[in-house]
Length: 416
Image (cartoon, rainbow, N blue to C red):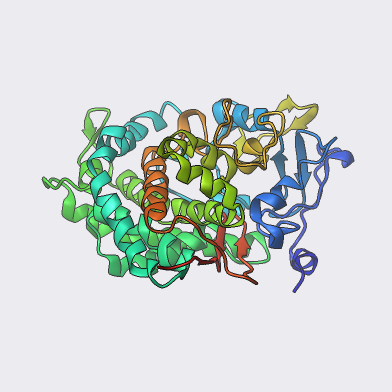
């Protein structure tokens, strides 16, 4: 079925009175035009010369889209105007999302964020680097002599998940179920907002049901795993409320099971198509360390939203309280006003501007772990597989949504 046909099956919202006709674009965040060519390439098509900073689409319940890097940063950074009360689209689905503290604004948000930071700060992450490297090496060794692999299936969907499940002291046997919940929350199926809301809510409740007994078991314990560390933390001098602990640990699982998994596959597709970039990485170990931020700039995967907190004028239009604004992180990193020649992965880029890890009070707490996992992956990969390419005829399958995904990435390389 064509992308156009898929769009035609989706319900369009009525255009509100506050939306000027010249701001309307038919853009479906879950079925981007040109998605078969690549997720980032599809979002880049939105950034045509003359496109306003704020546009409106009737798809996914009807919402605004910020198209400029500076605007995306501003919206992330100003919870007084752009609230995290609802962060997922369609809005009907976002209202079912109940994880903590992503749906909170400061000051309520602040003590919960401190708890997350305590478990994911740089010193904590450095303590697990040896284990992360061990997992990466073991996985790559399992297929390096074969001369081929399907990168998402054989590595990306396993590596960060094994790392996270070890940090959380949870069994790998639970991963298939938890990964289904994560996919249903970040790429919910359905042709109407109500159908998508039902799918997301079921997944959200699935996470809650899973973590409930784990939290009860680890409350008051002395374990050193990340869940024990968080649920035994205090909020404003008191034990963390149980419902908030459930929401916080569910968020931890969601973040650990979907985001880095997909980022890794996107940048490996690019490297497989650009052997000169791989040669550059092989030329000097410092290139990777210095260029890691450029990889995150080029391949963001998150498209969350903010709710307009009060009636206001913004970018020349009238916004109403309750309006939703999608802030695709890809459109910051790929904005030519923010980064020269943005589609090019330039390891020597000096000024790097992006929102790949969000921004403001909700900047991603897992960014230090994500950076380390990306660097370790490439270090261990290039030790064993210094040159590789996409298998001839390969057609990666892209999915867009709150977190983008890609499957079918067969890589090939010469063996000794």
